[in-house]
Length: 147
Image (cartoon, rainbow, N blue to C red; front, side):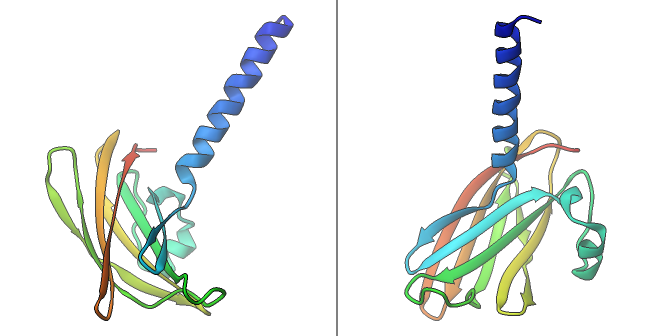
């Protein structure tokens, strides 16, 4: 293998690593006074003991959604307790309601939901975050594939 081929191979490996890392990375969005952190991933990435502890399924075609809400007007304070509702839409515009469960670990509060998907399917998520009179909608999409 010559130097150009080695460099090309190394560059390809680096790009694939970055793409792979970004696909699992948590994302956040500013919604009013809140910084909403969200992550959607294949449930096979859950450790079996964690899935069992929170009564979550693990399957090649089951996605897990994780959301935490921080109040940016109170820096350094733990995540906020909020009401979260939402639904997911597949490419055929079929909707499925998301059922969230609140999880508390010390000061951390986050919300988990699961939904089914087909291999290489892009799901659109519509999540409403509400606290008192304040309400904001988080929208994002994510492509899923069976492991």
